[in-house]
Length: 404
Image (cartoon, rainbow, N blue to C red; front, side, top):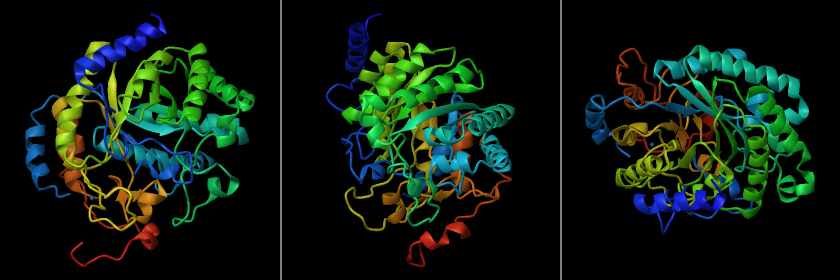
């Protein structure tokens, strides 16, 4: 199949699915052009009443289980993925993935760190193998991303900053490396290093070349080149791209992806998903290719462009999970662990997300029930609920009314 035919096939399927004429994933994290600026790390945010969701969860139990039920994972105390691997704690990973097992998840999405590889590839290799073994022991496959478009520059200060008020996610690699192909030898070697070791590892769900290269020409050019290196070293593990929207995949099918992704963290209402998810299912059927929703959070209307505190600041996965279940779409929610929002823009607005506290209590039992119900089992009778900010993050907790 030529690239031209691949793109034509995608566009034809998009017409059939009603996706032509706009991004397949409209909304704050799905349709806005991304900016190469200091605001770049504020584009992907990381609680609407759950009254209706409780009723929907009852209906949800009767639906067929979803094949792929996943979460995004960064340890609670890690503010970026470099810190996850630089301070890798085997006991924390074993504990946290044990929590994922409690709600019958069978997949985990996270990122490896190019910057950690530059510093200590042997240490990173040991940690990756441990992570894969722990996930496999708990019945989960891992979707590993290799590069990240979201975040601040990977300076020493940003990589190691642990102050909850200032610690950012980090872009990987740096903008300078992304921009100049003369600097791509090390990233290519990193890709080869990873593929040489794990390209046929059945503990892997897929390998993602980059998260959200999206609408940025320089980022897409870099991601395309790295995907080419990945494909040259292809094994049995599927290859993919962390796609901002369904429409971005028109380019990624040209690259040769095996799996299509799309992200939609904060729809204004469930009506958005009732429109979008059937289209995603139809697109996958027309292309005979898996299509997964690999980032989602809650129904929310945050007043995009504003910097003020928000009312919908808590996790509320139950506001969306039944709708996703209704259409049987494989998915990964953000995030497994309770923590202040990943990007600082959302953190400054007082938003916290996640399902499990570090001690195993859940923020919201209704959320745990809705997520676990995707497996066909909604029993959360033994789950402790605690809708409180973790003590270690309390300095970020905004002052609110007593009723909040």
